[in-house]
Image (tube, rainbow over all chains, first blue to last red; front, side):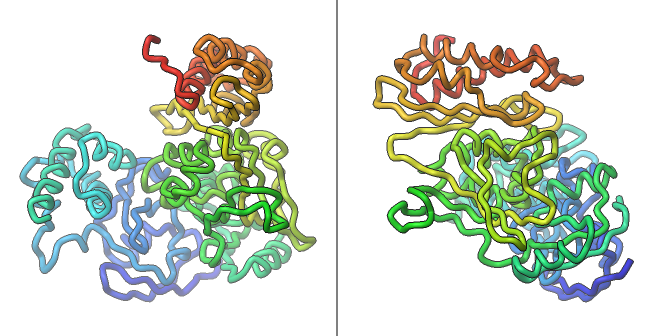
Length: 159
Length: 299
């Protein structure tokens, strides 16, 4: 099968690559470009471990063909912090122990960071709804919600 | 995970997409990929070619249409096929004028799935567990489909032919959906989520015109519980002319599980057909109570 040349921007850096039509976006990010933050979990669009932002929207990168992302701006968990520092959300995940095995964490972080851009004063119920598409197989949701809530509180202090 | 090999073509216009469909036997359209790609991974579908319409511009608009402007056939809402479920859930126009569809879009999947999936693909795909079909049926909406031969309208009642089978043919592109609206109508959608899959175990869409005391016109439709999304004429008949009271709602909802043949209901490891029929009655009662603002707190 023929390969297709695509161009994507990941965390501000432009990349040119060739992909087979059937290459998933998450596979291209991980295996072709080395962004291994997005994890491959269920591969059915349910678990959310592969969540990245495409043109500002959080999506599951196992349910998008890489070739469809041609021309897109992609943000992965590697792009959350700046200059090697953790983002506020990442720091709160660390403080509140918002991870156990860590497999779901990159997806949780990208989803939560996107959610907090739209709602910086959420209720716990709204936080739970926001991470509905991210499954934690350690079932460590309590601390994840705590970490997101603490980040929102911190953002609120700067409002 | 890799699907089987396929050829990929990106369309830059609807006409281009139609030409590509015509040139490549067995080609399927892809946009949000949320219906097709998971089924390609499991091998349930294996098209030799995909025609990507996700980057077509001008197919995601959500607009009110005015009956006085001519060809739109009455007041309504027009939604482009590439509108995502997030676009629809967040649209004030849909929330106000076609509430059942906004409810269904907001209940579908999860935030990332709603960002990825499109309404045209959802409806053309014909997954009988998905939420929008019940809303479209209750709202008496229709799809606008284009082929090389021209444009046609497919009414919701003619759309769903069976599991993953719809009246949209392989040489057609759904360009949008149309929903008629009325100022005295209310609508809503209630979903009982399957905790494993996230799809509707039972989803009920309702649309009602009332004068505040009596139901004048009613449409009720189900998804998830039945092998094909379908209207519930037994409930509709019972509702029309009935008073807006708890007793009348209960009597109408009681028709939900009984007027369909047993074989219409899905039976699987998670819920028997009998249980789904029971839930359908319970959930029809619930959504009618919500939409008609009848207090069910005593239940």
